[in-house]
Image 1: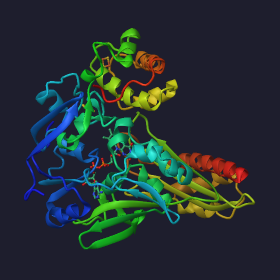
Image 2 (image 1 turned 180 degrees about the vertical axis):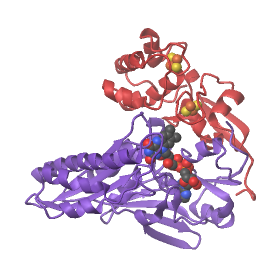
Image 3 (image 1 turned 120 degrees about the vertical axis):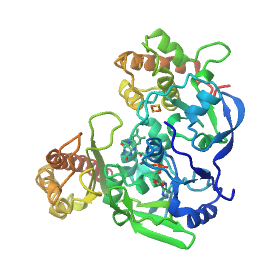
Length: 171
Length: 294
Ligand SMILES: Cc1cc2nc3c(=O)[nH]c(=O)nc-3n(C[C@H](O)[C@H](O)[C@H](O)COP(=O)(O)OP(=O)(O)OC[C@H]3O[C@@H](n4cnc5c(N)ncnc54)[C@H](O)[C@@H]3O)c2cc1C
Ligand code: FES
Ligand code: FES
C-alpha cells in the first residue's frame, strides 16, 4: 500500500456503459466527479445534508446518493446516470411514464426520482402505491405534492412489465 | 460542500487494514458506507488527517449461520439485512429493524458495522441488538475482543472501540421456539431518525405464558436501554394484551430522555410506554401464530 496515503487517487469506472479513467482528489464526491469532470449535469445537487435525493445514481445496480459517496469509492464500479437511461433514442419506460403523467413540474428532483425508481422497480415489478411511496422516501420534491410522481411510478411499472425487464446497467 | 482534504488508504485485506490502524489509528477515520461520516465531513464537523476505506476488503460482507448463531460481517448493508431470507426466518427482529432505517438509498450504502461504531443515540439497530443480547467482534493487529453490544456502546457517539481496532462482525442468536418480535419506531418525517424506537422479543411456553420477554429502547437516553421492569413484570405470567398494557407502564421507569426540536423529554417518556405496548402486542401476536403452527 502507498506509504503515506493518497491525496489524489486514480479511479476507473464504467459510466453509462463507457469506461472512464481519471485522477481525482480523495475528497472529491462522486456527484462532483460526474458533473464537473464528466460534464454529466443531469445528476443534481439539492442539499448539503444527504436528505434530498436529487443526486441519486445507480452504482452497481443500486440507487445511491452520489453526494454521499467519494469518487474513489466508485473505483471499479458501474454507474448509471439519467443520461444513460434512454437507449437508441428511445426514452426508458420510467421517463416516458413521467412525461405522460405530468410527473414533474420544475424537474429538479426528477433525475433522482427516476434513478431511485429504476432500482426499486427492477426489484419490485408489481408495487402497491404504498410501496412506491416508501421507495421514494429519500427523494424530496418541492413542486408536485408527489401525487403525479406516484402515478408515474405505477404507470412505469406497468410499462416495464409489458416490455419485460429493462436491461440493467444501461449501454 | 467539499470535505477538508485528507489522505486515503484503500487496504485490500483485513491484515493490511489492521496494520494501518495500528500505525495511524489515532489520526485516522475508518470509512465504511460513509452515510454518517461523509455528512459530518461535508459539514467539516469531522476533519480526519487519514481515511481508511474498508469497502474493498473482501470477506467483510456476509450473513451466515454457525452453531446457533448468525454472524453478520461489518460491511453488510442495511438493505442486505432487510432482505436476508436467513434473518427473516431466524431473526426477523433485525431485518425488520433494518427496513426502518433512513431511506432506500441510505440502506443501500449504510452498514451495520458503521451504524454501531457511530453509536448515534437514536440509531435503530442498537435497540434490537440490545434486546437480542447480541455480541460485537473487534479486531486489532494484537488480537480479538468479543463484547456485548450493551457494553460496547457507552454513550452518545461513544463506544469502547480502541483506535487500533476494527469492528468486524455482529453476532445475533438464532431464535427458536414460539417466539415473536417487533420493532416500532416513532418519527414524523419520512427517513428521520427515531424519536423513540422500541424492539421487543416474546417467547411463549407451550401453555402460552410468557417464557422470555426482552424489550429495549433507543432515542430515550445516552445509550440504548433495556426495559427490565417490563420484562420482569411479564415473565412467567399468562400471556395477554391486558398484562402487556399494565407492564408497559414500567417502560418509563428511570428514563430521563433528552428534549430537542423534535420532541420534549416528557413526550418521549410517554411515547416509550405507548410504543412498548404496541411492540409487545405485535410480538405476542406473532409468537402466538408460531405457537399455533408448531
Ligand atoms: C439521510 C440519512 C438518514 C438516516 N436515517 C437513519 C435512521 O433512520 N436510523 C439509523 O439508525 N441510521 C440512519 N442513518 C445513518 C445510517 O444508518 C448510517 O449508514 C450508519 O449510521 C453508518 O454506517 P456507515 O456504514 O455509513 O458508516 P460510516 O459513515 O462509514 O462510518 C460511521 C462511523 O463509524 C466508524 N466505522 C465504520 N465502520 C467501522 C468498522 N467496521 N470498524 C470501526 N469503525 C467503523 C467510522 O470511522 C465513522 O466514525 C441515516 C443516514 C442518512 C444519511
Ligand atoms: S444532494 Fe441532496 S441528497 Fe445528495
Ligand atoms: S418537480 Fe420541482 S422539485 Fe420536484
